[in-house]
Image (cartoon, rainbow, N blue to C red; front, side, top):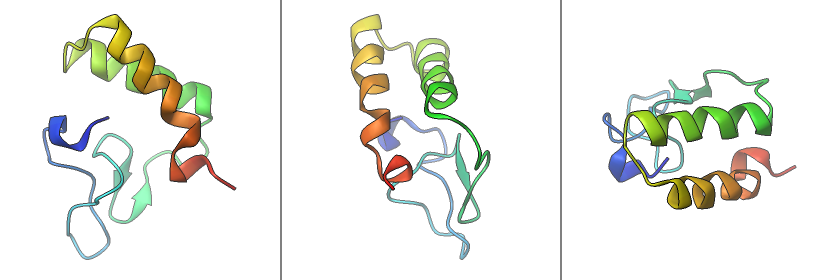
Length: 76
């Protein structure tokens, strides 16, 4: 999710500051809310949020979801 579209401005780090990498839907207190979530599950979550909460058009949702496997969380 684009952090500028996040209602909370982003997730939170352990010290309470806003995360510069992760949104509030998946990251809180310096940890992922669902650490065992698969990429496919994250793609569905993101698509649903972008569709229902932010009202992104389908093509922009597709582009965003396509980028998820490239994010830092999923790099090994």
